[in-house]
Length: 149
Image (cartoon, rainbow, N blue to C red; front, side, top):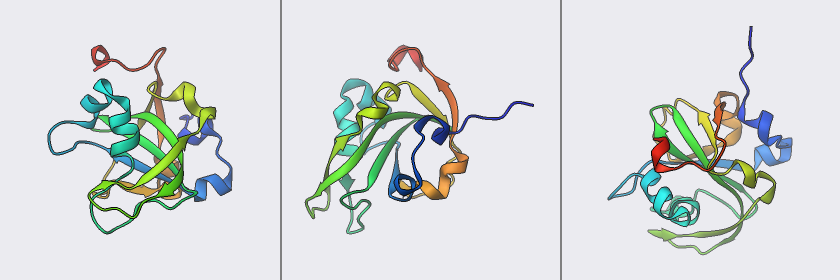
């Protein structure tokens, strides 16, 4: 019997980091899929979509770890960045946060595909709530390209 590799088997986040981490599931904006945005301009997803605040509800706090997953298919998600939130601007309908990329995980960005059945409507959730459901599906030999779709 084979055991599935889970996301934290690769990330190896300590308990403190797990408790301050949140995942942003990027699916689409008003015009196009976030995957198309990522393929054209990674910062369009890794900064603007990740840190966008549409309503009064805040998704992150300074010190949080923000994990960005972009939808590839029904249950497949591409890891595009992991950042620590360093600043909040207090804006709505805009990019509300700044963050610094965690270099430890850089080799996985754009290459790690995670299997997850997203059955909630919120774009962001606490990592601790879904950690045991984030299965490593594949690690690509190189950065995801349009031809990989």
